Length: 209
Length: 102
Image (cartoon, rainbow over all chains, first blue to last red; front, side, top):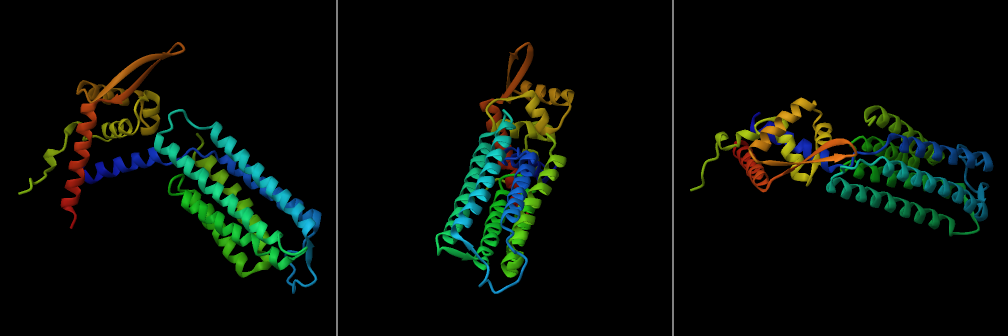
């Protein structure tokens, strides 16, 4: 082996040892399904006309409805996060290196920061007047998708590189949602829900152990 | 005047993908068992055992044998000498690469 090959080999092993690579694909599938359930439930309950392009003046949601709305979505998303955490932590190998463990903690911090900023955005929307227009409501998912996408792109540097695909998908859905607000929530369901399910099955197939 | 670094300065004991891998893992982890090293480097039992034996003979690594239930378990760690030799090997590698870059 020449010096370059030896150095590359060492780098690749160090990379394998330090990245937190033990993400169970089923955790992502569970997160995706739960977010789609949240989206379907809300649409079924309130029949919110997301796809109708209008001036927003006639389409308002009361604060009480919206609080219930976000309690359900937030509750399901927190449940999804807890399920993901339990699945990932219960499948941790015993020989996890200190560096990988540190990166797992960093991952936890990234996503905790995402959840806190997500709720801060929601709070900023809900805490306004007694009624909220559909237009304002449509501004939430792009912000959440972009934040979540950035969290995943960042996480892909210290964990599985495949996380960046979900990151870019969410980021893209967020950007399109910001430009075309009519599609903001359906795109959130695509990026967040379907994106997680696709990533989950990809991880299950690529990293079965 | 700085000494010119040559390929011959590299430690021949580490001039192999498997031994390089073993030493890298043992530098990152205190004790590591046979199965974990085998999984990380994707090797067969026989291949790994022969390289571990040669590093053990050079006193670059030490072994601790124990039982988990009724199954024998061997764990390995790099000795102080092994760590020093491997780190010096890496420094030499780095210097060679640096010097050959245009």
